[in-house]
Length: 267
Image (tube, rainbow, N blue to C red; front, side, top):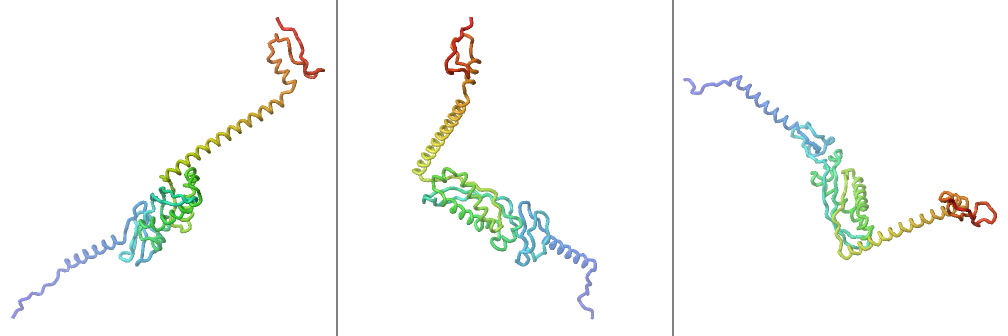
């Protein structure tokens, strides 16, 4: 009695093609998982099973271990962040202004930032920059009275920038590219007092300048007077004499000096 089922032998060529297709697909997946591109202006922090490994990867084509390593991008371009703040001056006056800071994460420190502070570059400002910035602002402005702050605004801006840079240099995480202070807001009555003081300082400076000029003129005339002896005066007279004047000074060195000489005028 014959069996109703037939023995079907797999086609050897078809099995090989299927296996080749599977291997090709697997290789493609592994290749796509192993290769990654870091865009310009960023670095890639690579983690192996959750732990930061190696240096930050530079922009361009890079390689990682598939399924075991992950890549986290960190922006290292210069960032610009405005920070509106309010603080007290040395004379306990409240001022408000805006501090615009320019900074950049150091490419070589992106891995350390990732493992110790922030998993994303978006967290760098609130966790690193902002606390140091506010600390520096309060530290600097508490040293000056309101009038000094208003009259030396640019100098204080530079001092705040140096203070923030020094504070952040302790951690080696970021570079401070610049800082601008704008939009100073103070009470109207204090603003009027500051303007009056500035006017008074300008008037005092003008008066001091005029006094210095007068002192220099007096010294010049004093020096000129000491240099004008009888011989010089006689020479000056002769240079200017038109030949008609009948009274001329006495000759220098003659007896009874000071007695004028009478001469006849020219026709």
